[in-house]
Length: 66
Image (cartoon, rainbow, N blue to C red; front, side, top):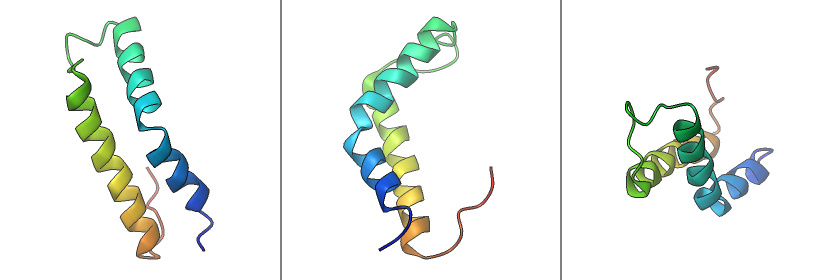
C-alpha cells in the first residue's frame, strides 16, 4: 500500500471534473486561443498525466520535483 494510493484514486475517479476545471480555467483566462478546448484533447492529456503519476508510484521511485 502506497502513501499515494489516495492521490491515484482521486485522479482516476475525478477525470471528468479535472477536465472540466481545466477547460473552465482556460476559457476564463482567455487561453483558449492557445490551447484546445475539445474535451477529448484534454481527456488524452489528463490520462497521460495520470498514467505517468501512477507508473512513478508503482515503480517505487520518488516522484521528481516540478
